[in-house]
Amino acid sequence: MKNIIPDITLDLRGVECPLNFVKTKIQLEKMRSGEKLEVLLDSGEAIESVPPSVLEEGHIVLNIESVEDYFKVLIQKN
Image: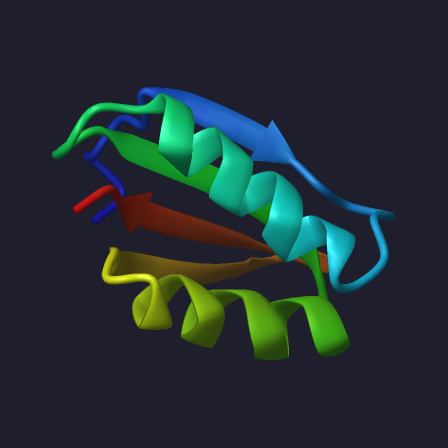
C-alpha cells in the first residue's frame, strides 16, 4: 500500500477526540468518491476511534501504518 499516493494529507496529531474524527469527516465530505485521504493520528484514543468511525460512515480504510509515535491512516472516500 506504500505506492498509493493520497490526494490529501490531514495532520491531526495533537487533536483531541472527538475533534479528530469531526475534522476527518468534514474533509471527506469535501472530496470526490474514490479520492484518498491520509490522516495522521496519535496513538491511543485517536487511532482506536477514528478508523472504526470512518468505516461506519461507509468509507474504506485501505491501510493503517505505525510511524514512530503516530499512525498514518489511508482512507478511500466511498
